[in-house]
Picture 1: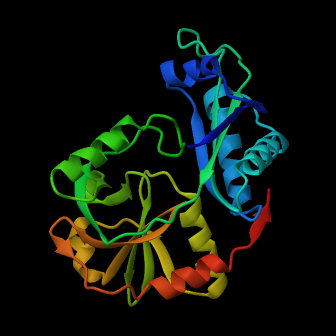
Picture 2: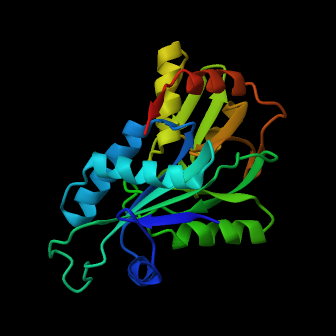
Length: 265
């Protein structure tokens, strides 16, 4: 069960009518451990950029941090998932340019790790709308995941133009070989975990690159992984291409992530 607060007050049912009936807004999800968050600055920047893009106004980071602290304290445990959703009860889809004040919905729930067997991914041709925004339009993501699972896979991997690997439904993809980590380039939502790993790898002086990667190149990689705010998960297969057992990249990625400091709420 999640705890919910809107603009600093416990959520009433009437507040939820707006995000439920008008699917317009954006959000970010983060893990807070003992009052600290890795990449809090990245989450705050994401919320500010999304609010300006969708509502044409700024979002005070102090307001966001106050909301996060309130929800985290109410959760009453040292390891929690926090989600900040930005919407506007006064938003009118028939007059979307009319200025409105953004509302802040913050939820808190006990954190869980992203554990399990290596993912088997079904390649699907799809590119999300406005991929640079972590917006509330998640129907296609969950529907494509559901279709993949119904076909016997664990999740879907989006494929763009020229047969290029792009991103997963709710995560970014990394590939591994003797040259280090390769991050597929493309019109994807660049996750905070991906950016933390990239910053950590750069700090360690580890080899990495960002470039377009086609499906036909998969044979040149010895491993793959998915990453998002929940953690890092091994990928066992992409379509008909399987990866050898073992996770040779795990140690360096763990070290890269641990090099990133925890920032207080």
